[in-house]
Image 1 (cartoon, one colour):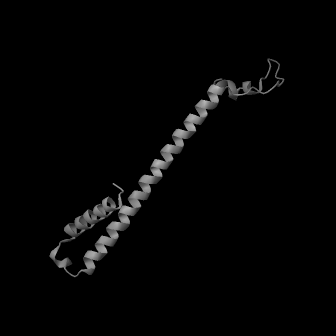
Image 2 (cartoon, one colour):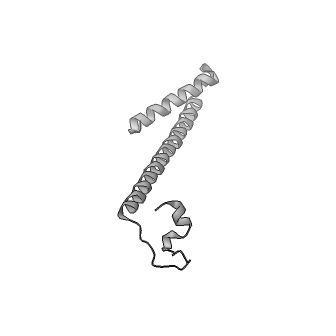
Image 3 (tube, one colour):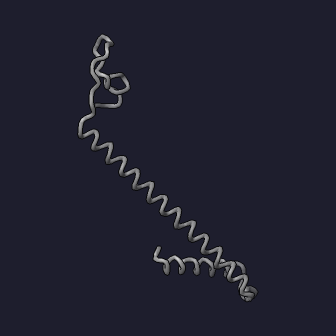
Length: 101
């Protein structure tokens, strides 16, 4: 059944005279299609959540690495760009060691 038929009241089985008849049940094919779309949306959402959690963890590791570099006291040997790059390298290494590549 098309969306136009549903919006026109056809899902209620309306007659030509506007009197409602019995409700029309969705077909097994329609139900299967809805479930498939729902499952695809759920997978896409879960993947997005996984990527977001990984990015947040990477940011946390980079902050910790930068803090460690600054606390080490030899941060004068690096310029700002080099220190930032080194912090991200260490964050990537921490994710790899954790098994989250």
